[in-house]
Length: 114
Length: 113
Image 1 (tube, each protein chain N blue to C red):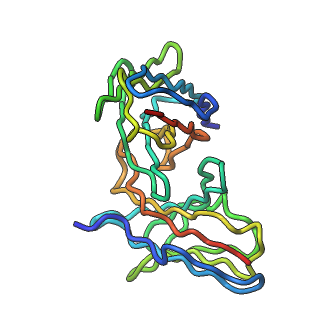
Image 2: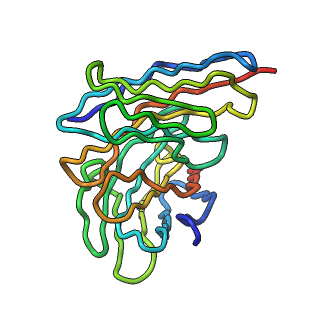
């Protein structure tokens, strides 16, 4: 049973390009969460999704960032017109239905904007 | 809202020393508490958890006890090893809502031989 799969592992984009980060949750998990970790900082919540629904996007910047979790396929975090300040590690986590469970994390995508 | 406060790092210890990383929380209701560990270049791994007051979570020699009266969940290990060098995150999940987990800022531990 594969864990949470994120790809790519490393992504380099020039300023103004688009970045697409993918996350496949663990089998049987229907809840997906995206976090951002800036260098030497903790994890900041970005967005929480269930299949085809955004439940909480209170941590997402209002512009340039979007997320989806379609009925089929992985969850996608999309950053348009990237800037240097978007350089960070982006982690995806998944969990099963409601319960006192901790997350299972992916290994992250390290985005570098040059 | 919910919040988690961890002692600031980095913490540097010699091998076989005793480790304590303090964690306190603020939350409504009855949260579950977690410690996660992040090794260099990797994602977070669940280290241990406790789901109600006075529960003790333990794993790989690490322990933490859920203290409701002091709203704390301090991480301890009796004898650290070089391989324990990592960043440790305290976190809570509030059962009153959905499964959003709130993390502390992390404490970097460096163990030297």
